[in-house]
Image 1 (cartoon, rainbow, N blue to C red):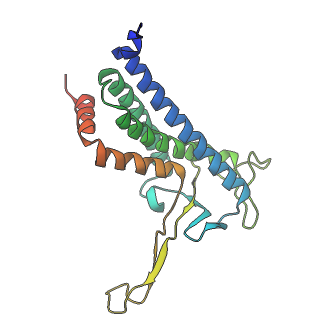
Image 2 (cartoon, rainbow, N blue to C red; image 1 turned 90 degrees about the vertical axis):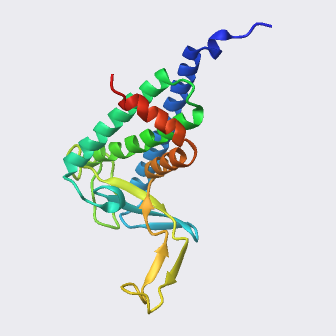
Length: 222
């Protein structure tokens, strides 16, 4: 019986890893954008829909960094994200070519991080131009005749995944927060954020050795 030696060659492995990374990035970006556009065009700002008692869709927008922080100018943040994604794409290409035996798990994790970063870039670059921003309970329109709510690279990131798993009241004797209610998990995020988080956790928990090997390759001095 003949075997396909090409499929077992380093070149064949490089091709398989490249296809895996491309497929993961495409699937995550398409799913992320599809959900964001659907929420943006079917929910008014702040609207909430309960799927399960501990899982809801709630439409909010994030104008800054993670958790709504606004550490930087919007242009700095957007172009910083673009530069980071360009670096990550260069890095994963270098890793696949030079370390074809690094494994599918590591490439999956790295591709999830790239896909998540790319998903949020689309919001920042395009959404200000292609959506309007009506007052609730009006719902946003895509490609409105009156123009968008901001310029290119000034769009806000759409978030909607909300998991209010449980709430409790802090005992009165606890300093600063005593008597107040606490909700876990109160943060609202999107599929792109989830992809980044899963990718980072996978690297930290299961692929730290491969991550070290990849870092040595990327930052080695010739």
